[in-house]
Length: 587
Image 1 (cartoon, rainbow, N blue to C red):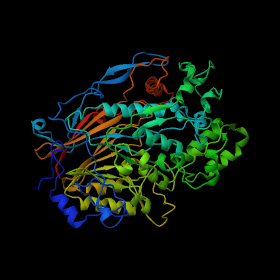
Image 2: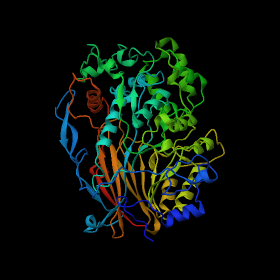
Image 3: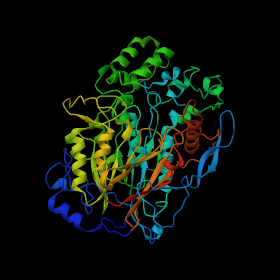
Image 4: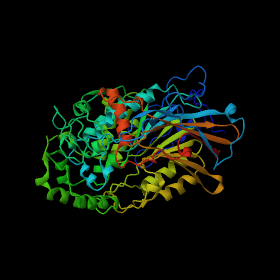
């Protein structure tokens, strides 16, 4: 029986797969047991019994009367931000769009496919938003003494940029190639930056809608490195000749007051799902939870803002090499510099949050938005202590969200044996459906296999083991992820003709600040096409230094990120990593 069914025309009625799910109660293991039934839209609330039978269903927006023609407006096919000045602080404007390229490493492109194809699914990937509490005491701005890009001049505007990205997604009129309605959005981790409750609240409000005040500590004013008078940071409100102003950064009186002012997010107008990243799970994205002194420091009234270059280099090397996964040496460094710290306003809302806190916050009705309840997570996850799940995207497509963070510390990831077995079983139990796998880490960044402190006897598995497992299942179409802050699309082939594409998308904190629309289509010729289209936020490419409104700051967020000293210039990837048609043989 064919697996294919158009999402534009399907009423998600009963078919062989739903009958099998209903009668056999195909369950998901590892404590998140619920069947994948395309006719059920209830989130699982229990790991057993009838309540476990339902999985979240991504409900698309109302389908148009007829499929839309391919379009480019609002995407990087039409235009991309590009420099319009040649020196100093470079101003941005409208640049030429990026063309779409066809990649046939895994299957040959057959003529006439555009007239035959039907859509399987269409969705948006947002990744590495890194919503930053820029005044948080735990931040490592002082590492700029050894690495100029260790602190970004635009970090106070991450919420403004994320809201503008939500506005862009809401304005899309469908999938750019097939015209199908967008089914959902998925965030693939590093939604927050410091594992701080402030940031988690901001992220959930950005996605679900509401008022946000991106400020912590003193409610009346900003307290951080950007009004410290230290020359190594951009001091926007003063005429101080700081390091960044020597690069041409402007003086913008009132910038900091505007940055911490309340703003509004409309929330996504389509269902959204959440995948966890290392910055969501670990303080600073690299230290295991559990140190009580660091937890107190996070909410306390002292903040270290400067450090010698030699000490900063030692700290940076320790983080890169994973020498201090639980933050013991980091804690000792901070203790040694208590007298060098500046006083700031304490704030309990800056406290680190646990995995259980993260799950419960997603389940909070205040952050439901247009749903689904829990945004993929359920109370079964809370009960089992897991942060991975599966969900029904369409009749013939399931989604699988993984937790690739290693709780033992360090920013690279891995999977525990229980999760790897769950992934294998979920793919086997749903072999009649195509599968899209979501995670934060890429295959090449899953190199951290230190034990999970909560499960010291459980083996951890690297990215190549995950690639091998996915390659053993004919129904896997794509593995969608982030983490590396760079566009990269990699073909993976396995014996027996089984193959899939790994789609890694650039972040929304470092330039070029992108997200992706991904479309899956059956070409009716023995091949499947995956279309990827990059999108920017809705903020205008041109900035106005006198415009410190919500929109003006979102535009400035992009321009500051382009000019950030030491920022990499290769994060957009090659043409083949951006707007593409990726061909696969049908499994």
